[in-house]
Image (cartoon, rainbow, N blue to C red; front, side, top):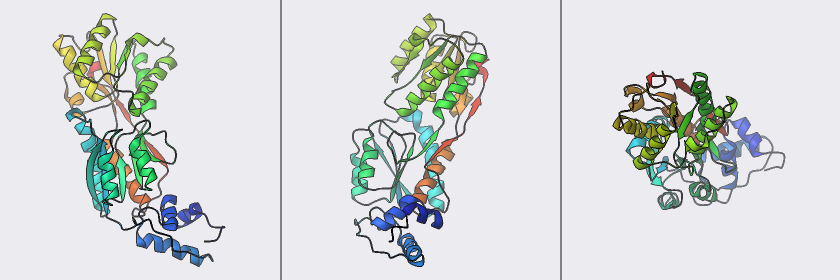
Length: 333
């Protein structure tokens, strides 16, 4: 291939991803024979010379994609992952791909390693991101195409995410504008990037509204029923007028604890959540929440990955941040 050609130029002209072109030229990673032939034809037709790449032995397509969910997920998070999966499955099925579902933690990625090293999949979707992400590091080292659902600090990763910072900031600002002056936040593990984003958005919202940050009523790394019970006790003793929960699981535990204590919502304290669920919509009173489209999240992740594999004919940017809605309900009236 002449030096005047770049993988970026070829990708733009052929309407495929730059990663796909790089794999076709290097022989590293999975790419369909049709796509490799397309790249070869382009180079020859434009006066270049094409040398067959040294294959790494992984070019045969399986037409399988793996979705990796966190190993510590529980029934309370099932709705989010199942909704994402429905969007992923819909897109994969329409494009001749099947799904393989597995679970990993941040430290133990042995199930992912086994799948990849046995050449069972062409690409991977990671449904949760971490700092020092072992799955990301492994997939990059093996030149396996992958997409993350969630933001990662690692460079050269294709991501799709929700605007967790901006949405949390906007909801916090609106709650304060409604007259709530002492907000409490209950947040889960800060090992998860999404929780740090929501905490950041909350703090920015308070700061932008000109209120002092009440550090004593911001609770992080709270994941259990016992944690939430302790938080609620402390929050009520400090007179917070609104409890904001970083996700629907924490919101459900908070609602159950307030019910156990016979605390009236919204009469005695208001409740809001930075993530919605059917439970929160149907609870009495219904809970003010941020609403994201998890089905579209899964569908877009699958489209991105299939585009990287050269089997989805649509231009995809390196990252996408999906829109959201704020649904104000009875719990903050």
